[in-house]
Structures are given as C-alpha cells and as structure tokens.
Image (cartoon, rainbow, N blue to C red; front, side, top):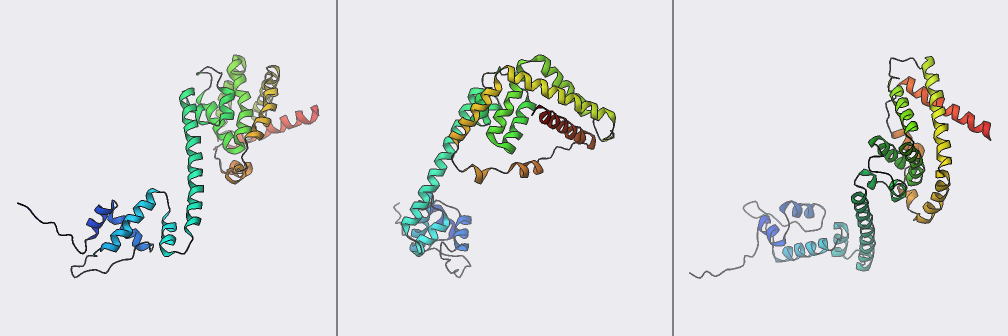
Length: 281
C-alpha cells in the first residue's frame, strides 16, 4: 500500500539532530553559546525545529567539517567579522596542524626504526645513539635523557648522550656507575647527612665523573658535541622560547624524593667538580 510522505512543519530535537548528523547534546550547546536560536517549547513541553533551524544546523556541520571553530561560526552568522579574516585564521590553524602531523609521523617512523622509546626523543638525541646495539641503553638511561630533554632541551640531552655512549662501550665504567647507583640507594632517611660515608661517596662520584670525561675526550665525543651546537642552531625555528620551560622552572617542578643524605652527596659532588674546574682553569 502506497503511503504519501508529508514533511512535518516542525520536528523534535532528536529528529533534528538525526537529520543534521549531530546530537541533541550538541544542539543544546549551540543554543547556550548563541550559535543557534533557541525555539519556543510547544504545548507538549518540547522544542520544535523549523526549516530555518535545520538549514542553520546543516551549515554548522559543513563549517565544522571544514575546521571552522564555533566562535568563528557565530561571528560569520552574525556578520560581525569578515569571512576572509575567519578563513585566514583557519588556514593558519590548518598549517599548524599539518606541521604537527608531520612531526608526529616523523616520531612514529623513528620509533619503528629504533624499536624502543629512544625513537620518541628528539632527532638530535636519537641520531647520536642510533648506532648503539639495541640492548646497550638501559631504561634508566632513556629516563635520564627524557628528563634532561625536558629541562635543558634537545641540545642538552644530545650532549648528555655522550655519557651513555661511553658507558655502553666501556664495561668498566658501566660497572662503576652501577656500583655508585647502588651506594646512592643506601643513602636513605636513616643516614645522617654529615656521615663520613656521604663525603666519601661524593669523592667517588667526582672521580667517576672525571674518568667518564677522559673517556669522552679520548673517543672524540667532545668534538661531536661541538658540532651539535651548529646543527641545533640551524634547526631552530624561533618558536622554542614560547614552548620551552626555563631550566630553573623545570628543575623546581621535577620531584626526585632524595633523602637529606643523598641530596648532600649530590651537592658535595658538584662542589668537588666545580673546584676541579677552577683549578684547571
């Protein structure tokens, strides 16, 4: 039996949403921000949407698919802003999104190539370490590089990579680093910060640091570090200062949970290293 379909004069919010390809919740949001006039409620307490409302909803969907923000839609409907201004800002947004996608794709490619979280670090860091065997870097090494990159940026982490290259290629230095890490772990809250073992451990850290530095120089890694400055300067886009947290601010926000004894050990080590530097100069 043939039934004639007679279009309704008005429809409820559910039907309006279904036809426009959106949701009742989204339509209510459009009402709240003034993007879509809110129709009066009928005798049954429901809002009814007419032809003009549906046209507005369809245009909203089309503009949303084009990436136009809700605020810009409202301005365009109200003719409060030149459409060229809206489109110009939209083009800038899309260009930024394309740049983000390009960076994300490069990160995924590096991650697949490395087969480890190393690929998620900046190319400056990844390139320095990519020649090492897959098992040469420990998770704690990558953690340290991750923190350094956040505090001092890609250049700082790329320079720190010399330490991990040296540890990966010098078993004796790696063993000493492991021993010192284990000794650090014993400096818990039960140890007096002025216990003689704290000063002794700081001296051992200082000696290990100097041995690392000598190995870095012997391998020519310090010369590679000099070239990093040229590479990094060439890759700067000018936006880094806007997105990079200052080193001081980052350090004050990174929790380590060191005991008082371990904190003093770190401070004494830094003092000893600073003293050696002033003596050498």
